[in-house]
Amino acid sequence: MVKKLKGELVKQRVRLEKSSNPSLFNSLVSKSLFGTNVGEDVFLNLFESIYLINKSNLEIFNKGKLVSPTDLMKIGLRKDKLFFEKSLVFSHLRKLGYFLRPGLKYGSDFLIYDKKTDLFSGHSKWVLKVFLNTSKISASDFSANARVSNSVRKKFLIAFVDNDLRITFFETGWIKL
Image 1: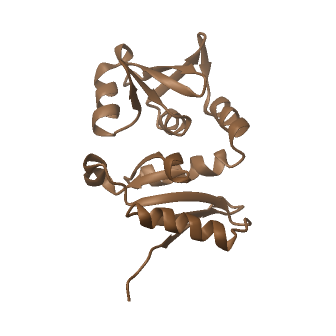
Image 2: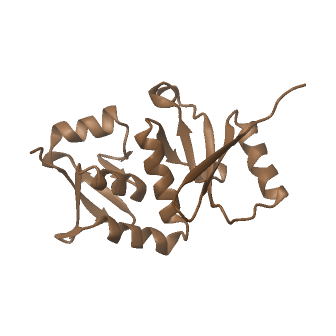
């Protein structure tokens, strides 16, 4: 049985403990591109943390007590009412081999990198926004998101999550005629 990597919950992030499993730490951070370096530490966001717990690669503790994916979900839902749906989309895309980073800088939920190539070049392919399939998107919000995506040379991707937890993606882009 592979020894799990350990992490400590710090507010709404998880600090990884490299010493708990150095080879798994290096694999997740260097090869699978999880986490963000902050000084000497590597932190996971809640989406990454839930994904890795569910893959049985990570154990998270808070003041010595084991933290479950449900505990992390509750923390996320306090901050974002669509956290569950965003977590589903995050997990789905990671399983397909895409790499995701927070998209707040562009007014979106995530930036999606098309496999490893784009992440190393620093350019994401899509700006992603997640909605419930019952959500209404105003024309001005749609246009604003599409314009921001286009101005940074990315495509705007919308993910709709339905009541059966199925995800439907719509990609938009500009064309020159």
